[in-house]
Image 1 (cartoon, rainbow, N blue to C red):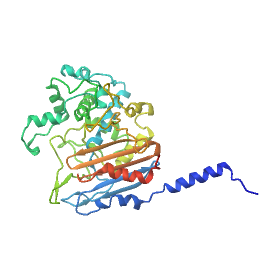
Image 2: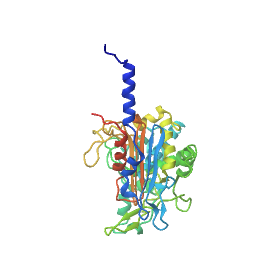
Image 3: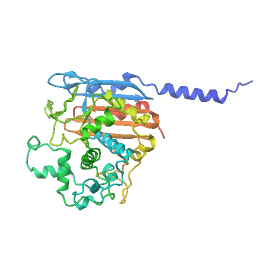
Image 4: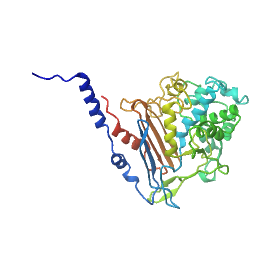
Length: 372
């Protein structure tokens, strides 16, 4: 007589087998970053959060070639465009407070802004459909044939001023998607105008302090100092490293000025997961892909994409994903979040010869169950 196993027992066995197959060792993750192990070269900090717990937290290389200080979980890196999710959150907190709406117009905040700003909404700025001119291109045109280290640094207020000197946008707002650092610098200025506080102070009081991100800040030279600071580096053709830490646009805060560590970003990831600052309903606009009127959002290469407020939303091998990269002189960063899989991978690098997103996705591949 054959014994029939209860269905519940079979289901339990499948679950246990799946769980066992999902076990990933620290050595497996560590192996992904073998090329960054050094005591005399810049490197990276890596964080993996699985099911709400940090299962991997490690530094590679050095934060500063002058001191050879090893990178560790407290090392603060410049986030570059990874910053945009924090800028977007500031705007969303002001919407939560009832102090602005996503459909408010640029000229509602800055009445002297030229006529082309009358149809640009806060939503357009958040999802890169504003059509604002590129402030970096404007800056370079103002200083032709000038080495970067000779070009005066610009602040968010300077970005707004340069945009006010233009007569037209690049396309009608809402019609196209085009990644815009200008838009996020302007968002920082809207935060200042609406809140009455400097952007860095608003970040500190409404995000960093509540989440106990004690070593995170918007860096303003002469006003504050970055603790445990990593300096950016570039490898020259002869293989030597050169410190490349600041550019003319480095002081612009709204599009990329935050410094933080993987220790503090674990707290940020937890706040996103637990909806500490904004409710799930309030977060929904940030996770809703933009739909330009002229057709799908696309990169210059023609590849389609999904973008919300400060987050790219393209899935990865069938897994829902929210992510953002950062790139600036000397630094490359990424956050890759897979909400349905309870997985987050963050890589912060102070060198420009690595691909943090590719490395992070190699780590994600260790944990994610492949879908057909």
